[in-house]
Length: 95
Image 1 (spheres, rainbow, N blue to C red):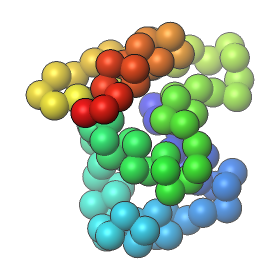
Image 2 (image 1 turned 90 degrees about the vertical axis):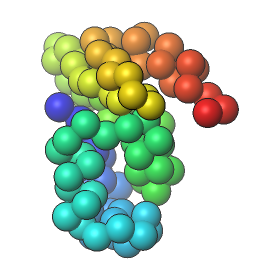
Image 3 (image 1 turned 180 degrees about the vertical axis):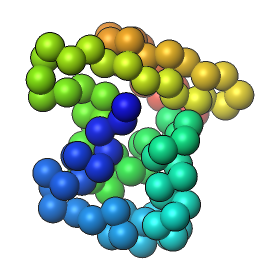
C-alpha cells in the first residue's frame, strides 16, 4: 500500500491541498492513489510534498516489506524492494 496519505500528514499537507495544487478534484486524487497510479502521477504528488517517490513505498518500520505496483505507460511493474523502485525510477528518467 502506498504511503501517500501518511507522508502528506507528516508534512502537514491535506489531500485537498495536494489536489488543488495538481489542478484536480479530491475524488480524482483519491482514485489515483487508491487505484493504480502512474509513475508520472506519483512524481507530481511527490513534487507537491517535496519528497522522493520512493518515500511513498518505504516504511518507517524496516520490518514491513515494500510491496506495490506502478504503471509506466501500458506496463505494470511490481515493486518489492527499495532497489526495485530505484531501478524503475532510473528507467523512467527523462520520459
